[in-house]
Image (cartoon, rainbow, N blue to C red):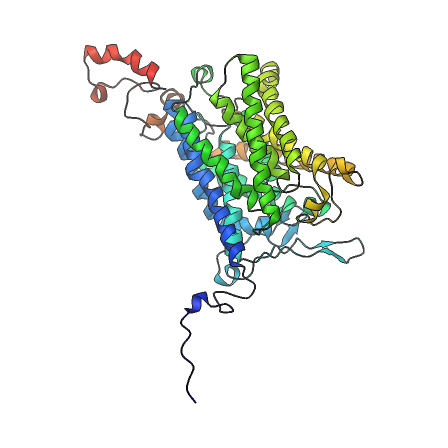
Length: 486
């Protein structure tokens, strides 16, 4: 009997083989890895570019490097212990058990979030455990880039004066004791997840927490130098727009990847994300024109961000018309808190939140969470949420209670971050000064890193004849360089 010819398809591509198990959906896995990459690009290079260009010239390197360092540090901490604290087995109702996510047997098996099985009061299963059709390795990396961007967003509150060495200590501590708590509580099967608090893609876990923690850290670190607070122009507006563009387009992965599958809800999430962001940008710009008589491109970027943040907790849960309403409110409410309330509230003025992260992320994230509780559509909720019959307030039934759940979930995230971030800052300050020295605050990048963003002498650099020469011409050129190069 003649033997069968060898299969011309390599084992790696054969269905049912060890590399392509029956549970694997290649489309879902591809979309999940693409989504993770898009979110990663929001940070590196997106926020690295945005931070490096939106700040004063003398802080360009320091600001970009804080973002880059945080990304790398989170990746290592995440796989060594933090992933399982966020999505592993339960230790406490708000915290998972720490452990590594590095072994082959763990990473190539089908992804599963072990604490996500939803039960009725009588003990029967209401919604089965989350078990996407891709490997744990894809899940670990997807969730990692979310953790990383949260720390980078937080950094926006303390740019221009926080000691880099203190930041090196802050990143792993805050990731461990703050981020993992919010992630497990709302996403990993913690008490807020099972109670039915809605946070589709991080309005609370990422944005509300980074905004509150950023404001708290800014309080403990102290303000920038007086000169920097009085004048802090961006050093490159066009490059800032490039970073903002990466942030916007990357949000397709941010919100579109959270159903853990390339399904119809993922498509809804991506479309709603862009509707809300565009609406918010336009409203913010209109308000700038009406009240300040000039359209500000920095204001437009702020409006874009608040729109992206606001839709995040409800991206796949609301209809398109609701996304427009959320965009109108996200372009106006944070604008009002930043432009009006901030200038009249003495307490908030004393805290130097460099990039206004409190307004763009905490206010917008809280707003989005509450509006999700109002507009969440029942059919869309059924596609994503573990608690059956979930709905927003406008749809009657249990919708009114949902708004209260959203407020209670926000209160937990706010309270935890206020307390834990304060403790972390106080502990670090015992060992490493949170704040740069006065010389570093005066000079900036050259004093902190021995590097500068531009090979030009100007703002924040002391005159050094060994570098700049000692001619009358160069002395007369100094003011021009200082005014032109910001």
